[in-house]
Image (cartoon, rainbow, N blue to C red):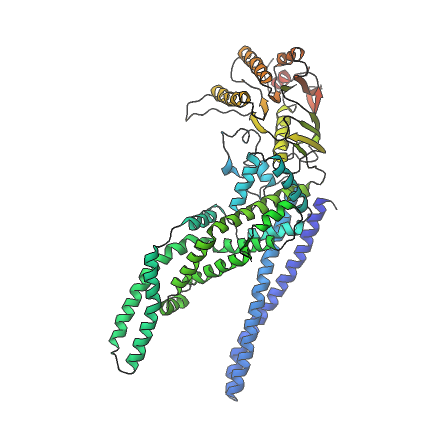
Length: 597
């Protein structure tokens, strides 16, 4: 089945299920109304004839009301979950139509100093991150950003590939995991709260012992005073003294408990979702060693992580009674409710805080793997690349840019093996040079993250990518565009001279100076790259540089993108061809906007 047809069928099925659940909701609402009103009306009607039967009928109808209400709540939860699943599938349809606006674009991860992320559109609107991202939790978004920002080692890449391959056809399982997270997202603020709570230092142990002893003693003392006062052994006014001391202790307890509660008050729903996600991950049977390794982290001393998280979740909900003063105040006054929940909470944190951090990492890893698996499912014709740790190999068939729609994407073959080689790409304006560089870079990033790539076949070595394509000035630091590019080239030369395993993607280097200096500088830079056994692709309009191919045969590899002019109109085929470009279109483009040349 076509991927678009699959999501469309899912939408139809989910809409039918949602309609059925809405119908049940209406029926449950009617049942609740009839049972509640019936209990009241029949009680007063029957009370005139037989009080016992009036009570029995009222109890039966009120029990029915409670039963129906319980069923209604369960039905409402299912309805909301199905609506989230519907949204997920509708968003996937939009994504296949090149609309990724529903997904986080990761703009907060932009880093102008990163070796390639700004040049290759890794973060921001319509970026690689936004295109892949199906994460719902902040730590998962951070992990995905890290995977797209730095390559994994070969062995890890291969393990991740196996995991992604296993999850690729598991659409229902992946969407369930995503829906659990979407119900209450662990966003940046909530994640910060949880991290703060994990690292938080509680009250001093000595204070806890004193307060704990008083919390136990005060209700007992108060009860004894009531008993003794009832038998006139003690005067009742002592009870008021005890009551005032009680309130004073409650005030002290509240000062300790409130900061703890406030740390997690906004995170309660997110922890509910986190609990559900970890339970969902734990109960799945995986085949790949990487997924099994992740899953094994979800156990502690013979207990599943979700069982331990359930204790945390229940305690937090008990503390949440603070929002219901009619229940909370008398309960707190009689048995110091808050203190006991606080003690449970701190004991849980002391025992499982490091494990909680690890379980958050598990959740993040599963969401990232699911994002890559979703991408692979949406593009079944793409391949998983062969990975080599020897420096250097890059070979691909039908390599295309993943963010360009299928009907507009033009793919190219590529082969660049060995070090001390520079592929020089020439071509007219808008012919596709910069897009080709980004195509190579983006697919290499995907490959080294363990993902499938937009190609029929690909072999690639694990390397660090460094690019110089978009250079901007910095007014704050009083740095011009040209000097900013020199600083970037200086960084590249440092890596090359250190013989690090890097791959270079350079577009129109030294564009900020005059043509003579640019040519001289570019030629000298290329010679240094060859001398240091560097490897990369350099796009340029400087046709004179292609002459270096005669001097450095098998090291300077000339390729080009061409354009045809028909009736003063330009036509591009965006196909990479061997050799040097012989047609330029700048004059034609200038004439089209009114510059007389």
